[in-house]
Each structure stands twice: as structure tokens, then as C-alpha cells.
Length: 282
Length: 266
Image (cartoon, rainbow over all chains, first blue to last red):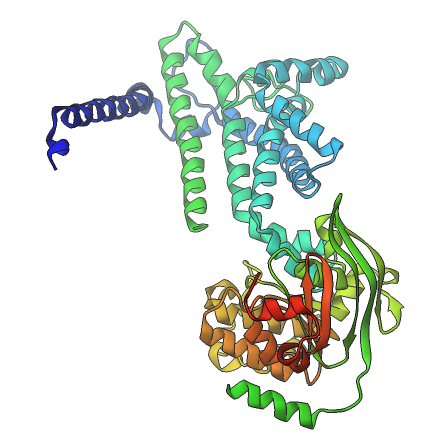
């Protein structure tokens, strides 16, 4: 008993308390930028958010009001295009990587997917510019969608692979043991078991793609007019924010804040959906 | 004790001729460079229960996983000859073979996303059998055979994983017999279960052998003595002794068998 009351032991407790205090402070520090972001976007942006903002086109310079209907639709089109490329390629490559684990090809693909995941999005934008925009001789929604798709692929591949791997091998063996062929096992037994996890990966990758600006600057470019043509430049929320934030007009700046708020709410909503899905898994 | 007397009565009533269902000759199994089994030969008789006993790592599981070529799923290989009804199992497509030689695993492994009902008929459904009323009939029949029907008939749509461990294992056996295999391999089917569930599984094995050839791997020698007609003792990848269960347990010919069943090693 005596040694527990010794000064040495008390000093240990004090050290522990100091360490815990720093850990808690750091955790709180993490929250500060988040609250600042939320505070400023709401404070600056909320006044410009009204029905017109979602339904009107941008007004010419000098006129107040107007909205970003074209950017909302443009972002939706770009994310859809990106998903059309990223989801099937990501899911299928993820399944391949999880089923064939140890030979040379999957190992090298897995490594390259990591590299692609770490590639700055602006580089992906430049590559999309050189391979699609230059030959097509036009900025286009299509090239922007492809750039977003390329950003989504490694995210989806990784989560799909991990989630398929999480399905216990005993489940796979049970299926083989019943004389169920491998492809049916993967499609009807393994994939349903991994589905929720895969969905969360897909949702997160959509949130990521919706928030990308850099790869769109060289590809989709942005457009002040209504356009849903895939071979023409198209507006997007992020490029709208970029253009409006650097413009020398107060009204435009306020609209950039409002668009930021819309984007944050959208991405947060996707994250909440992700949380709900992953909680249901347990 | 009860089941021992039962063994005797069944032995008397089902005496009919011994027919070879599967034969294993000079089986050597490998995992890469590691040899798990060497020159194991034995007969597996039709509608009899064969128990494989032996200490951990002696190759019991590898042996039965060779019988339905599950061994190759985990990257293993074997040489030697395994025949099912006089046909080399390497001549079968592995998928077809596994429909004839079904398997029950150590840990209950119902399909996690499927209901009780879908688990039972999974093998049929996924192989293209879609007649709904027939599926219902089969599911009820199989669940009755494994004595699970009364416990789950009102919760067929519940998740298979919501059942208790013992129920899950009986569900897995129902799932296996639903595809009408000729041989059922059981890899320590009761080792993850409590005594009551174990007793139920053993009773079930007893009933099943009227229609199926069963090979069961077990750590539990009393279990082997209770449920099997023949017993094979494997040690360090080799077959030490193979005989009628009674003979092997009462008067083993090999010293090592005697030592093992007396609990002197293993």
C-alpha cells in the first residue's frame, strides 16, 4: 500500500493527467477549423441563399441577384459521368484484387492503385486535358467527368477490395462446398455480404468527386450559360465558387459563400448517409 | 451411454453388405513444399459412418478436404488416387463433385445475408432451381431431417445468423443435404458447440447414415466411438490404423493407437 502513496506514484498520475490534457486539447483544436468553416460559410452565405439561387441563371456583371442553376445541374452531370466510369471500373477491379491476391499482376495493380490514389487531382486534370481536351479541341463535360471518374476509381477499388476481403473465407468455402460455381459464389454470396461496405466507399468517393475543383479547371472549364451538352464546357459548383470568390464584386463573393454552403451541406449529407449505413452493418 | 446401446441395435438391424463408396489409394497431400499426408489408403463404405481421429495437425482435415477437392481451393495439391463409385474424382468437374460430396464445416457458417429459408435452398437456388413450391417442400423436408423444423418454422424469414450456434450448425447440415449429396464430409462439426447441441448433432449423424455415406473428423474420441462404424487413426500424416470402430477402440492392433485412445499422447 505504501508504495502507491509514494511521491513517485503521485508524479506518475500527474504526468498521465498532463498527457491526457494535451490529447484532449489537440482533439478540440481539430474542431476549430471545422467550426470556423461552418461559421463563416453560414454567416457569409446564408443571406444569398433563396429559391432564386437554385433556379436562376447567373446574372451579367453589374446586375445583382441571379443563381447557379446551371452549376448545380453541371455538377450533377459531372458526378454522374464520373460515377458511370468510376463505380463499375472500381468495383470490378476491387473484386479482382480481392479474389486473386498473391500473383504478380494483382500485386502490381494494387500498388499502382495506391499510386493513383495519391496522385494530386490537378495532375489528373492535366492528364485528362492532354488526352481528351486537346484531341477533341474543346473543353467538355465528358473530359471533366472522366477526370472525376479517374479520381473515384482508386477509392472505390480499395474499399471494395477491403470489404470483399472482410467476408470470412468460411462463407466462400461453404458455397464451394455446396457445388456453387465460383462466379455465382462471388456474385450471389460474397458481394451481397460486402454490399454495405462497398456502398459507403462509393458514397464517399462521390462526395470527394463533388468537391473537386482542380481537375475541372482544365477539362469542364465552367460555363456561364445553360448547357447540358457533353461535348461542351459545363458549369460546376466548385468552379463557380472559384470564379465568384476571386471576382471583385461583393455580390459575387457572397454568392461564392452561398455556393460553398450548398456544397458543404451536400457533402455532409453524404457523410451522414455513410454513417447511417455503416452503423446498420453492426 | 444411451447412444452406445443404440449403436449396437443399429449395427444389428442394418447389417447389409458393405459396398465401397469411395476409395483412397496412396494419397499424398501437399501445401506447397509441406507434406500433410503420406501414402494414406482406405475404403469408405456406403451408408456407413467413418470417423477420422488423431491429434491436431495430423492431417485429418486435409484428408477429408481432398475427398471433395476442397484442398485445392486453398492452394493445396495431392498425388495418389481418390475414386468415387470407381471414377477418379479428378475426372469430375470440381463443382459437380462437390454436389455429390457435400461438406459441413467446423464453425457454423450460414450465409450472412440470407434468411433461414434461403440458406437451406441456397445450393439449389444458385444452381438455377427456381420452382418455389418445390423449394418450400425441400426446405421443410431438410429442416425436419435435421430436427430444426419445429424450432424455426415460424422464423424462416429471419436471418440465418440470428439462430443459436447449435441451430446454425444444423441449418448448415440441412443446407448440405438439400443438394442431395451422396457423401457428407464433416470437419469437426460439433467442436464449436455446447454438449446439448453436440448430442443433437450426433443423433442427427446417426439418422443420416441411413441415406448417406458420412466421413466425420473429430477430436473427441467418445464421439467417434458413439457415432461411427469405422474409425481411422491418423498420426503425423500417416494412417496408423483403420478398423471397425468397436475393434479399434476395444482391441487396437497398433501400440500408438492404444496410447492415443488411452490419452497417453496427443
